[in-house]
Image (tube, rainbow, N blue to C red; front, top):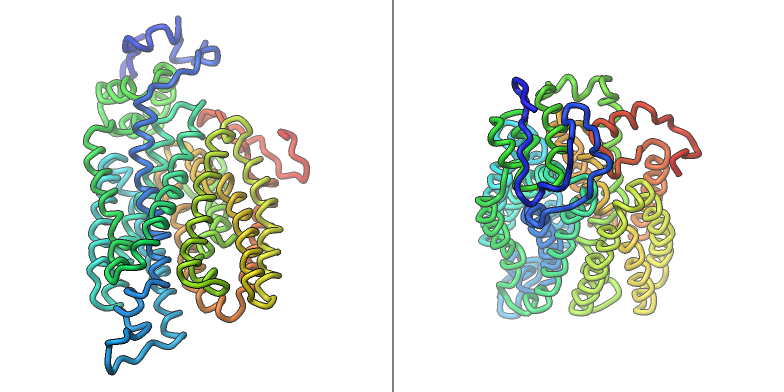
Length: 502
């Protein structure tokens, strides 16, 4: 087939028998094609997911420094035995510093996510992934070097900006390169990489806590992963969907031949996207294709992901457990929780394409809610080690619920919600929401938990209860659907207390 301005179908050898007599214009015979996947697409998704590894390392690394002696002595939270004339910081000062270390990171991330929605459209996904890693390296270097707390705060803003840029671009890049039948599983790699980074940093924290300079590695050790990401990007193709709007026909065909065995099907979608072009900001907030409703829904879902308390629990786990246990026991307990978090994410890899997105979100929320209520009740009881072990158990079950649902699934479903024409801008807004509420929860939690840890858990329980209701009533199923089919699903969806697709 050859038409003016269209993409010509040229299959590489290893996909020669995948289709026969395919009509790209009409999409005929696409439904009966075998579902085969090139190993290279798995490598592409894994490289892009390195951004999640960087982020996960920061969550566990930075949070654990709050109970490290070297960190507390360096920033005068506590006085070393040989530091004559030192005056330790008050609890209020330490709560402020903890809140700003977490909160400024979130502010930077929100800025980075919104900024990158423009950069990713203008310069492409691959280039902006590299730029994001460079921004992170700059910020992490400042953190690791920080001589005083004010310099640490500046580093947190820039490192957060880099992570925010990565969190906007990586899931979009993975989703645009992935075939539909494994798009969910590959999208899960972002969250899986986060959990692996958390476990790695938690394991290292046990040894780093014994070193006066260990906290510097906790803040700067993930620079290594950022460098690896930049080096690997040199061999990665650009998103064919971005090239459809900005590149040449030859560039699109070259990218398609590298990443997908379902070449004709993806070519058909890419050709349609080329015709549509890019959308202005006004269209993102218009009623066309119910875009305004979709953006609001995505914004709200990512807000609930943070309001359910996961980053407060994960980031401040050493502090929370230190209420019941010694510092070394708290760090070890945190490693146990983080390992459970990582292993539970594999549930999503196996089920997200089989059972769909909305069912996992609903089931996970139903598991998280009673665990948060239980932690809230236990937190107002007498703070003994027995109560501490009970909190640890319920926290572990809560993390399992989050790890197979609200953690990975939203990073899959949010990019799927939007047509390519508006995807970059819309996802940027939704990811910005995630970081805004990460900032709010992270900044408020140290003070709020000091006042009443139990009240914090009850608030998180209420948030996930409402979140499950929002998903059940408003969110359509996007698993194994093309962009056009997802558009149609939103057009046909009528909010109701009984879902017809269940």
